[in-house]
Image (cartoon, rainbow over all chains, first blue to last red; front, side, top):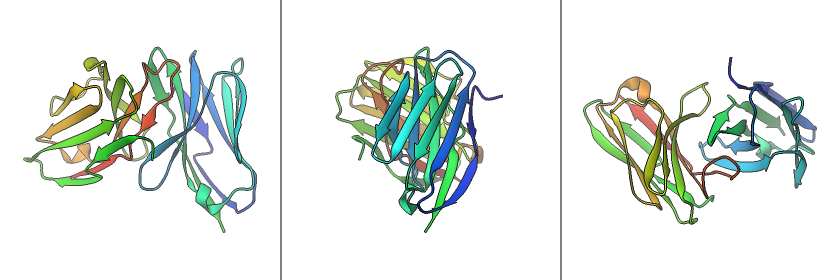
Length: 107
Length: 114
């Protein structure tokens, strides 16, 4: 069992829908990262958080340390949001990655 | 553009070839990393360099040989690879270790071994 689990694995939604991607982890962490990987392979760091909530544009990330759970929300989704979203946790100077959630937003 | 540049973006090589992947960052970061991303598997950490010293080798086969000549450049030398080594190889850098700092990733090199 992977130490970082994401759900769903795949998600298809219509443009404009509110999107939620979940991440659960089973180890103690110092920080949690949300990353976005576009079809070409490049990865962009969206958020790094260790408590509470962060917002950047239409993206919101929350974390509940007690429940070992984080969510990434996308409001007013757009086809350009189509990508793989990866949750990763920092622990002992390592990053442990989830398998990613493949998001496809239909126009 | 994340500030981490990888070349080449795509590489096809035979099992007897020798090739090198290059990663460059001018973000002033002290730590650099090689990751492997195979289909349907999480990113796997291969090597870590801190201040040009290799601090981690995650049981990577010797046919992968990293080199870090300075804190801005990282290479991954490849020789006698196997078809199962075909994957996306990602380089990343961070200010220090990954405990509480953000990692910046390159675009990756898509490697196909034939």
